[in-house]
Image (cartoon, rainbow, N blue to C red):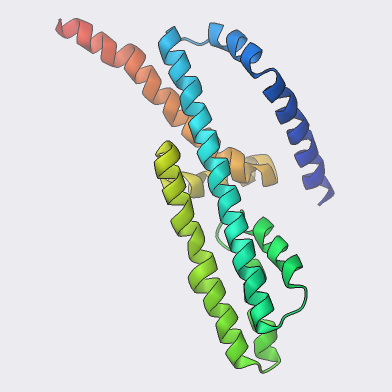
Length: 200
């Protein structure tokens, strides 16, 4: 927890100073890019849309899942519903299990207390509604904002966690998508234009 908190603090400090000097940093960075000015500007626009889609999809999914599980805990009578809603919001960014790390133990607690009806209600809220929010919201946001395939998010999250730790959940999908953008722009800048000139 201490390591993750330190990484987040450093990342936010870096992000703050990067945002303050965004235009100046981009002018310096653009001069070393092996692209024309128009292609470099397209690269900047594409990187922005990819980052925007990833962050928006992650935050929106976390808020909706946290709210839904918090309401579910309140409905079935489990204590500290607001707290567990917040915990669910943070857990929802984790791949595979996500919000199930909260609502599944809650369901087991209710079942052990022989509150089977409430256990079924919480299970349905978690498994049917909360868990599927991720499968609905992210693809819609990614397709509309940046046309990112959902598989990139899943593969990137696993690879990112292995390389970057907790921050890799966000950095992994971004890195993969950035790579595809660079490949596409390189193909358009050098290969497609060269083929067109050869045909002419």
